[in-house]
Image 1 (cartoon, protein in one colour):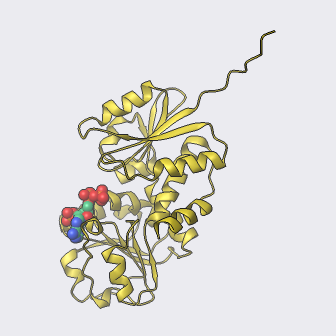
Image 2: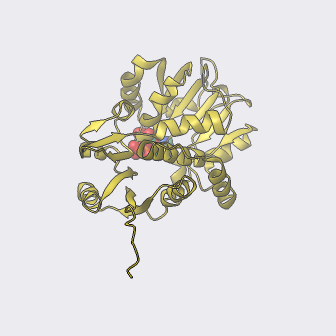
Image 3: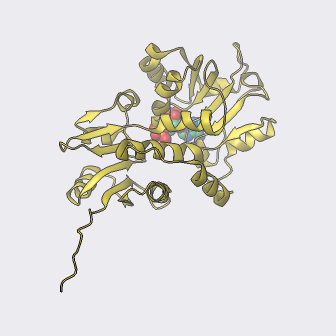
Length: 286
Ligand code: ATR
């Protein structure tokens, strides 16, 4: 007598592709989402050679890959892998989520801004609508969040960057979506002639170099909120804010978890609960 064997559907394959990649929390986050929502999928971290993004993605696809997250330094380059782009990826000029559609086409999306907005509004409980935002940096991280911040109804965004021309270019690209101005980072140390800012978001990589950004007292109030997109360590920028008695301070761990949840939703059509995971990651990192 032979046993009947029911063929199980294979696990769908996903990955995060970056360079470096060993410290990525994404495999852990997606494994937790998959478990909690009973999704049959696996998610791994793939180190891509700096000149080998297309090959790494091709190999993942050949092995049955259904999608990938793209991280530093490949988010702009990944646009070239896409047959189609979501509006938010097009606006950001960068892709952090690739999906293989039913017809084999590759769709690029960008969930970073949605992750930031959700972390600020839902997790931190800070209002965005009507607020004046000072956005530090004009690289890919800033480009990814400008559209969603403006769509959330902020009153004004000032993009401040060391290289003013990069801030001006970004401001011009987003001017049609709302009120956007620019400043040179060097001007932040001096007095600000207009009103102070309600929220300061650090989207520079200064924290990675252990550096803060010099901001004079007229740019903020004690009641302002300060957000650093970095996470996993006490950044010099958040330490500065603490020193200014600014009590509303937040790092980027919630943004990381929320952009992952949004990517998971894009792939699986299921919106995972983020609260339990965020609490346990927070407890571990603290
Ligand atoms: P990402 O994709 O993470 O945004 P990026 O495109 O290299 O990375 O951009 C890094 C941003 O951090 C830039 O805005 C950069 O300023 P410049 O455009 O003038 O180079 C900013 N940045 C990096 N180190 C900085 C520092 N020590 N102080 C202030 N800004 C810094």
